[in-house]
Length: 113
Length: 113
Image (cartoon, rainbow over all chains, first blue to last red; front, top):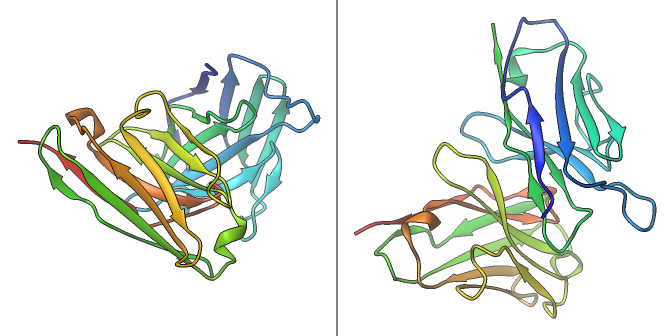
């Protein structure tokens, strides 16, 4: 089974400063068609999850451009260029390459210092 | 606007059964794969099950295989999760999601005597 390891698990950030979350996979997430199905989700306190990024680097509709995704193969990163108060929550990476089983990372809790 | 409205959670005794439902609106329900994802109290997201657009193909996480059944009624824009032989480890908020993009509000299932 594919395992996704996120780091750090806790991320205190000063408002206006950048933040970065790593997601490493135990197997390559490149699918046979060349796509890489690595997504990022945000879960604000008390809310349902929301997808932010799909296929490594594509922002979903309505997602601020301060969020960006990058990476390839087994190493991926979610970056927030300037953290705002509304970004507080838990961030999860998720792989859909090795379907029909989907895997989430453990989650990274972002808080304001 | 895409909406997923869930119902059917609650308290059930160990070994009991429960059926969760999710009604979709604002999109062509029959065109999308649907998933269930759960989140134990204070824990991360765990993918549970998936069903393809016409209901002919289903997949389950190993932890629920043989106990849970996912189904859909495209005429009623509804998704269901029949949960049998429930144990304490199944206690969680269950989310229905449209292709892991849009998420329902979640419904709490508590397994306890």
